[in-house]
Amino acid sequence: MMENCIGCLIPLQNVAGFFSTTEELSNNTFLCNSCGVKAHDVLNIMNIPHTGLLQKYSSFQVQELLAKGILFEKFHYQLVEKYYILLSQNSAIKKLFNAFWDDESIVHASNAGYNNNFGILLATDRRLMFMGADAKINLPEIIDYNEIISIDLIESMNEIKVATSENTFSFSDVLSEPEKCLAKIERQIDFIKDKKPTEAHPIQNNNEPSLFDILERLGGFRQNGLITDEEFTGQKKKILERL
Ligand SMILES: [Zn+2]
Image 1: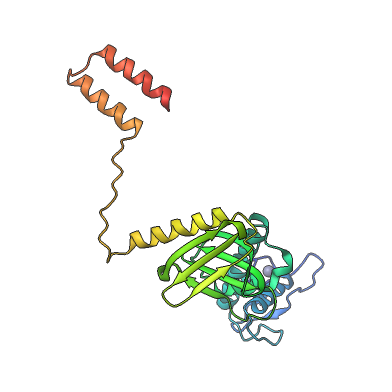
Image 2: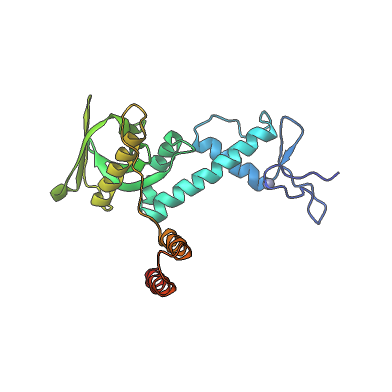
């Protein structure tokens, strides 16, 4: 009988005729070796206790785990490759990932200090988080942008100071582009505040027409005899040069 792995869909019987499945799942489906390892890794990252066997999980649950694993790889890659977070902070990266929502996105990340801990300052599109690299802090500190009253950069110390109505937070030694970090957080705060339906902001309608709109209007003017063919051609040439 030929079975396919529910993770990667490869047939579980290889050419030599060995049945290579390692895991039988709760709904009589199977998982290959490498997908089994991946699913276990995700259980470890998410701190879900497990016996080493996935037999109590259904194929749907395992597929969810594998999808979560892909999100983690992307998250990890962004932090390490794009924002130069040190690999020694892997445990902090995992804890931040567990606090990170699936539909959230990273806007900035940097190694930084907080309350005498060295760790990662992560700015998402909605929240600011800090996780220490050592075990002194068990959970990430999380500040919702909605709660922020003020945010400042003390440039001489690369320190980002955040105030909420309840607390003040000082993130020191922000290593990677603190100005950029601040600007990105400020932009997200503005964006969130603008989106709030309770605050009556006039809709900022960008009335500046595109060059194509202008061309179209010029065409209309020519058709209606408001401008000559020559004028139209001259204007069109100018516009095309600006594109
Ligand atoms: Zn597989």
